Image (cartoon, rainbow, N blue to C red; front, side, top):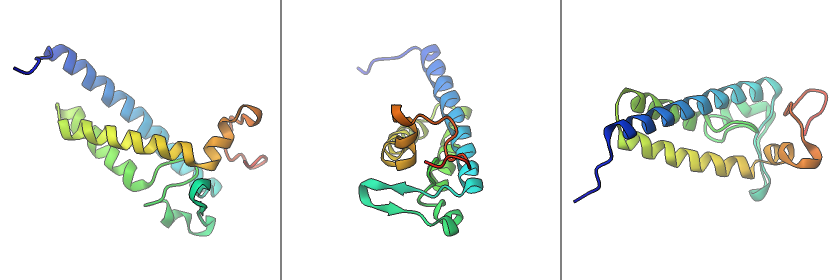
Length: 133
């Protein structure tokens, strides 16, 4: 017999996941807009991939930017978050888990993010016009 979790706990967990996902989504969209404005193309040093600032609007759809996930992932996150906000949805929960893991990996391999988080180069204004990373 499967373990039954009280509905109040499930409801609270769902609300927390929706809130965290919505906040992260808002930050991702803001990062995307910042990257487009400052022309911060993706730069994944691990596999020597570097985006072209001239084509970054198109590249950002599937490859992301220096400070945001790809638009396709942000859109998937928005749909999953909305579905989970409406009702308990196991597929939406799993989708958010997979997206979260993929985005975390992306943040860690992106050169701009790693440089901004390095203690010797801490920079609150990623991609600031005066001090590019």
